[in-house]
Amino acid sequence: MHIPDGFLNSSLSGGLLAGALGMLGFCLSRVLQTATTFANVPAGNNSNISNGVCTNALSNNAGKYFQKLTIAALWIFAFQMFNIPIQSATSAHLVGGVFAAVLAGPSAGFLIISSVLAVQSLFFADGGILSLGANIFNMAFVGSFLSYYIYKALSGKNYHLAILSACFFSVLTAALSCLTELSISKTVSFTTAFKDMMSLHLIVASLETVVTVALLKAFKNLAESKNE
Image 1 (cartoon, rainbow, N blue to C red):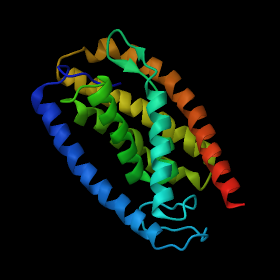
Image 2 (image 1 turned 90 degrees about the horizontal axis):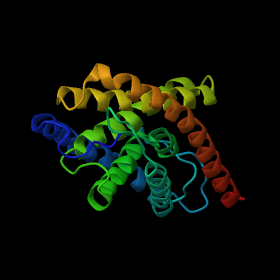
Image 3 (image 1 turned 90 degrees about the vertical axis):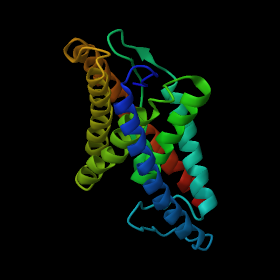
């Protein structure tokens, strides 16, 4: 799903990069608000805190909050490194967007995925620098930020259904967005690549659901053991 440089036309990649930068500024301000809230909470206070961005009972101060975001980013970085090439398009891999957003909130999820994509692009040549805005739009905005609200809409009724729906929305919509961008840039034929792209990402979405549930449970258990 990582789009390399040269696959998108300049106007599309430039517009998506500008939008990504604007969204990064917005989400960074929200995350800093959350960190400031945590900084004002006395150590040992385990009550839920909500400032309209995310509710987090796993951290007692800003340092632990950012530590959790960093650990989540490392897990996502590792999972995204395993790519399955798609001959008629780019590649398929886990996204990790729902895991990041449910764990830390949609704004923090967006920043986590964006940071992972930036590191992959700059230091591992996994995704282009000029196409970074497109990759952020597909995997951080669609795959994490928007997907969080699918989870939120269903979580009150059934937690596992909410995770399942959000993961399938995340992976399949991000893949469709990637394919649409490639098609607009006349890099691939939408009709030719659609079957390969979407069928493989259906499998990825199923695996994404299992991994997301497992990771969220592991983080929850870890937080509970620390609070005992």
